[in-house]
Length: 360
Image 1 (cartoon, rainbow, N blue to C red):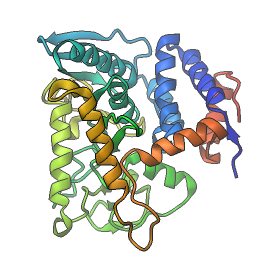
Image 2: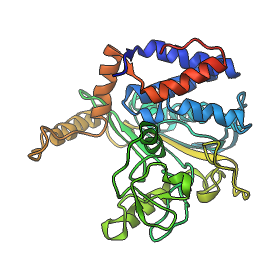
Image 3: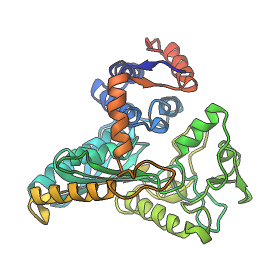
Image 4: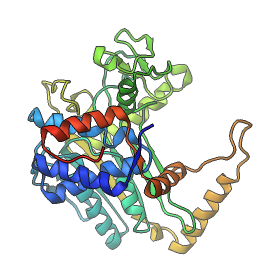
């Protein structure tokens, strides 16, 4: 079993690695914050496993290490930002900061980011708002790896969305999920571990069910949430499509199959319908519709009601969205984080290549 390493050491290492390849210290801090938040919350598919992909994209000339993020359009309550093809976290954090500050003034605010790249876990940005007694929302489009219902064409990304809602006595409600049955990062993790995947998550290039996590490299696709039409895949298709439109058409990023792949082994599409990959962000004050304390008490009651639901015979309790991630965060802060050997190997190779001291 891998030994646990402290959050502080892993964060410092990640920040140093991105600074060494050419990021500013400010930008490297943001990238490290988001990647390590994923590790803390028990989502390793969006944590340090992504470092190799990010650096490979930069080595391929597909990432700008010193972006100049700019507001290119705004109204009294909305913003559109151009991320200048930098790491997605940099513009994403700025966008969420802008909507939080504007929501403090007017109640709610929204932002779109274009010309961006992978931004880590969506929940990071939604939680920024919940810490300010606001409801936070964030979503993004992603690599076109998902086939719509009745299709074998890879048209959509896993397109995650996150909503974070504060409570008074409980940790915030956090729904942070891909709008596909599995995220690409989890497939990559299974591939690294040499494991198969259960049927119902991916299909081969002919549209037949597969249990190979590497099937995407052979022209296969992730199916939509629901798996097939009889089990509601059209609803998963609708969810992915909505997030794609919110992330692209609204602000001017590429949509659907034209989203630039976030792995260097997939070539860029020849056609562009916008600029880069896109995200969207929203925040609104909890006192926009009722007194804040009334809202927080009602949210506590909602959480307590669902926590007290009777569990089935195979489980000891019913969980509230965000509860497992909160518990893992507390555990990892106390006891450290285990990084899988396969991921450590990639990071050690990068550390040697760029002469960075690693903690593994």
